[in-house]
Length: 135
Image 1 (cartoon, one colour):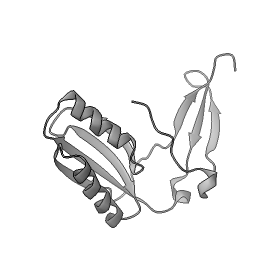
Image 2 (cartoon, rainbow, N blue to C red):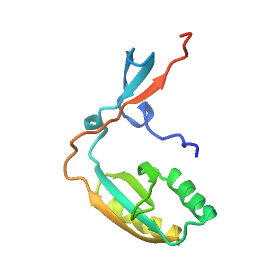
Image 3 (cartoon, rainbow, N blue to C red):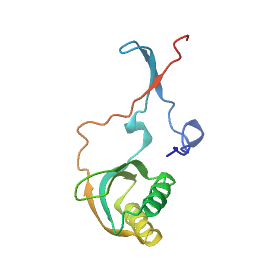
Image 4 (cartoon, rainbow, N blue to C red):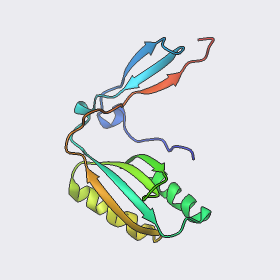
């Protein structure tokens, strides 16, 4: 599943990412965002159960998730839930509106449960980017 380009960056007033070069496990770049400078947001961890796990229905839901700005991470998992999502929203009203859309636009959703992050213990916003060996 390809990742859509995210809106953001300097054109929206966000600070530029800090970029470090490292050598552990080869050469790479690490772009890291400072979440405190991006403004307030709440993280919601969402467990989604679907009615049917038919391949075409799962693909439709995965495509829908990939197009959603609030979805930071989405995992197709084993266990009681079929998907685990990490969703960021500025407040619960915005999150509630998003979940109403999720359910109305995806009739294959059986149910979902939400866990609201009260405190961030660890957040990894760095993304290692492999450099060409010749660089």
